[in-house]
Length: 156
Image (cartoon, rainbow, N blue to C red; front, top):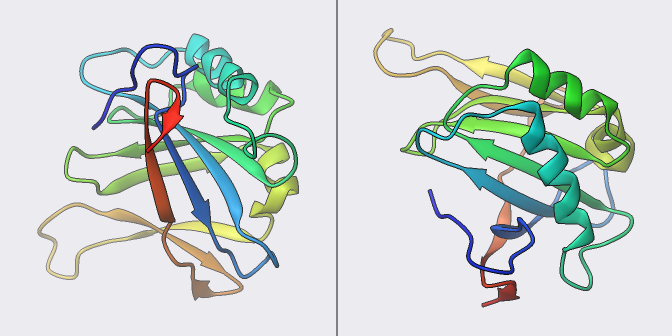
């Protein structure tokens, strides 16, 4: 998991996500919290700050921010997302990139995630980890594309 640099305003990764529910791609802002770092309600407030520090073109409509952690969202984090006026979500993934939990607030639904459902896919043989699968109208949704890692607040 990559950690952002100085003056990145909490923005670690930028991406585009084409969903069948939208004519244009969503713009995504990611803030990563890795390692032993505890995920508390304060991180939702930090994520709100990522909107303010986002690069030009990543502000306004069609932008959603996600907090990414190896930990799962606590009750306080879920409540913080729910209270926020910003379109935000949370992703829990393993060190290997397997997504274990994904959730978002009402504002994120309004921004383009309405109708997208989170389901779990379990391994057929019982070996390995269960992982999140996103669907829209019963069909699997594609993955995030065109991601850009941010170093010191500038896109590579």
